[in-house]
Image (cartoon, rainbow, N blue to C red; front, side, top):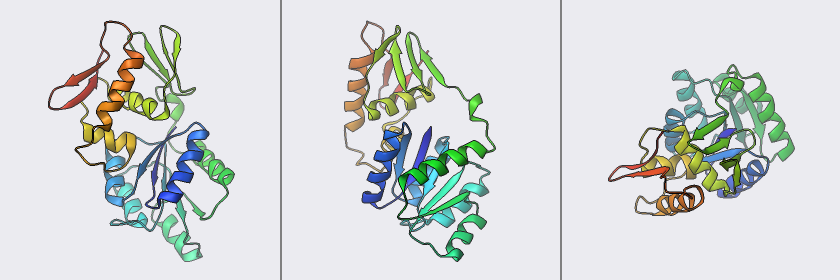
Length: 224
């Protein structure tokens, strides 16, 4: 399950991401409403977890924008604002649920599961296995195999591979990869994308056939 977490407090985001990833979720972090808006428009998410008090575009405004674009992804507000008026304002403007900070993590997981069960989308119809030649990625088990041999990937390597496979036959730029896989605005001069591409290649390109193609001056692509 792909989750977009919109939270500018690093202490909270680190806690939430760690817990969600331990429960098998893929999490992308956005620390501002502006970045979150771009990620929502560029990608498909199973659920959005959102703070209200954000720099720039706040959570209520962002929820309104998302619903105005006819995007029906479930939105769960995580906020320290616990008054009834705050909860009502969020729900009236398009949020699906509201959880007041601090919260018990088990309750967060339960609310995520409840929201995704009753969402209008039928996620069972989504593609759950990605193939590229002899490489296979199972979204349900997070297992990556090549010629039926398991490949061990770190959570970040897995997210990067999954993003490339979801964009198969399309060129993705380093900025798109940073936004979708790391979830924050890195310095565009960073080489973290190239480093992780190299990590992936070392693990999945064991033969002579290239899987991840470098498109000079543009980015990267996995193609059939």
